[in-house]
Length: 330
Ligand SMILES: Nc1ncnc2c1ncn2[C@@H]1O[C@H](COP(=O)(O)OP(=O)(O)O)[C@@H](O)[C@H]1O
Ligand SMILES: N[C@@H](CCOP(=O)(O)O)C(=O)O
Image (cartoon, rainbow, N blue to C red; front, side):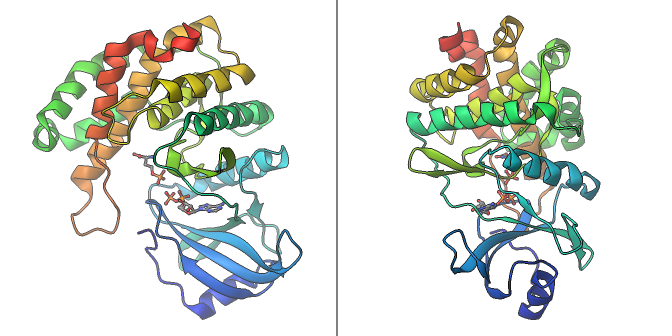
């Protein structure tokens, strides 16, 4: 579940009164999610059909987010939404603030967008995701803010060092061996001069809402940063083109995702050549944070731990497949 903080009806009512969105009719905690508390808020304001019952997502930032970086994330949402991308716009309060403080934590109210996230996407859905990813890369080309990616190879190394070899091996010996085998190559051979842009960096199926085969929303931009755009395609590929446990690679989904993305954002020769190492790096980035969380999250914590082995298996696939994982481009 992901409602870590209790907000009373009075507190919620007072908070929503700071926005020009009507009065609260209902507020329901949202079970999905890991990092933040989220509520679905319905108000007496007008919805898209002109009737009372406007819906919003209220997010309270709980974990991992440096609040000084909130302007980057929230301005990016507004920038992309203004350009017609399927992302929720930020609702500003009556004084124009994109976020406020409540009980010492930051909160933001964002537009609710309809749709569901899928565990087992179809190639048609993967195609729509490839197009949506390309759309945000195009639309963010003139986004004026920058944010350093704080999860690059040296940062993964630091996370593993903080975990310690023994604790990593205690999770799974294959995990420990895979880190020892692949981290040196990733540190040495990570590209340095690929085209850079604003990237989502965490476009997993649970961060995409769909209505049928259409993408209705890209959400959870809280890892967004300035880095190689081809790395964003690699992260999305790693997240979408395998069974959730990483045991099976789905070539139809892979082809659909890559063809759709590259039909809008053509990749350069150096980007295509770099995809195999970017994909191994994408797998390692999630192995690193999942391993760290596995070791450092108390068993009784509300935060759900995710299995790093799902991404160790993806790393093995990428190691074995090389460039053929991206065959429409080969
Ligand atoms: N703008 C939105 N419109 C509709 N639902 C949303 C929106 N933002 C978040 N949600 C819902 O809230 C859940 C958790 O949001 P998310 O930002 O992924 O939280 P976390 O950062 O904790 O993972 C999503 O799975 C989705 O169901
Ligand atoms: N996508 C990451 C976890 C990041 O959490 P999120 O809920 O903020 O997307 C993973 O699966 O390891």
